[in-house]
Image (tube, rainbow, N blue to C red; front, side, top):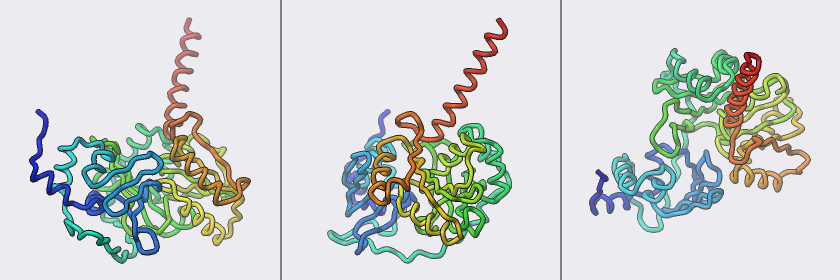
Length: 324
């Protein structure tokens, strides 16, 4: 039976400001502009919010209000969106016309050690079995305290300074359990992390910075390249963020590394291509190298899993020929 909502429920949902809804859902948004006149999603650089409207430029999506956004972003039906919005907990349920929410002062980042558990089963199963990350890389990340499992079975990627060797300045969590929404699994950038920071790993002594849209893409790329990958600082931007790239370069230089190239290992889709075009307008093109997954529409995890499937097919065919 189709779930129905009343006119009163619809009215209440429409009173909830989009920014209130995003904050209640834990979406990583941050105010920008000289007078903090708009918000930007920290995982999707081209997704911005102004007043009660959203604009997702790379996907040519736009709309007004929390209901419209919930249907677009979380793939909810209209009744599901209304119910979800009304079920949220909000500090302020409405805004006066023309009023803009004031930005609160961020507290210093404090990593929540108490959320970690010793069990690593869920994270290992997700990364190795489902995502096909090289198990040697996963074990190394745990050993170096760059990866953990929390009480909700999420994978926690710790942002450590100095290419993964310094103090923890932020973290992002990747769910290991599939959810029934458009995003598939839970994702969160922990609050108050280092501005323009991200999950970072040094392989050797870096002379280049390779940037990715997510930690999973980074680890997939490393799994593919194996020992071919040398002298690089790997950086997850958690989206498409030029400022994360430039800050990574400055920090590497301060640590004594001479960075000669930025490698853009982003998704082979419209968002990734738009990002590449933006970067070419910001720095000299000879300083950039583009390294996309071969197939249109794919990311590096698609490429990693596809290669393993092809290897299995080739091994099966070879075995069949030998047994004839």
